[in-house]
Image (cartoon, rainbow, N blue to C red; front, top):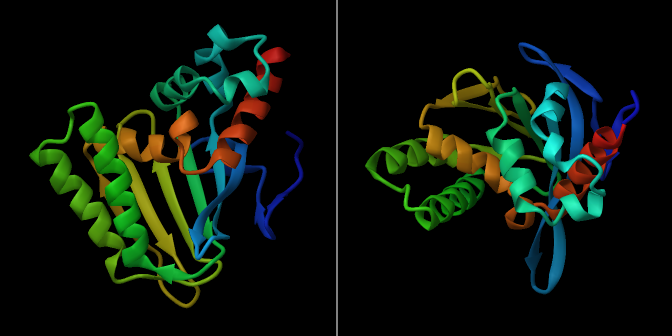
Length: 209
């Protein structure tokens, strides 16, 4: 990864950002949806991580990106690594916020139910996150971000669109926070295979050094 801006479907991603610590762009890609047999590009995604994440991935040293992309345990290690993470999602195709909220709720609930962690507390936290998006409208260029600080196992969600003030919410349920990460960083179960491949390739390169 160089120090140049990365362009994902005309959307620029800075190579580094600082929330409370410097984070590096280590993965990027798109999500798409199928409408009437056409693949429509939906969002561009940038994954920012602390470089220290490499210390938690030493077991995979020497593996190629193509191998890592198929290894869900590798992505589980990324999710559980005690480092700050930041997921930046930029709208390519405009949709209602309620549609995104339903996608989020459904994806996270299914993942929680699969590991028998969907209790009342998780349901409440997930509903709160979904409701945050209900009244929003995702114009092209709108930005959703998930900031996942290592210290607290929470997720700070923000939404920005042209002409409106930034809106924020905090999800404090660690199980919901984990599955939001896995929605985007869940290896073969991720909503964005292109992001997973990019992350595997870039981390594989760093691990080979």
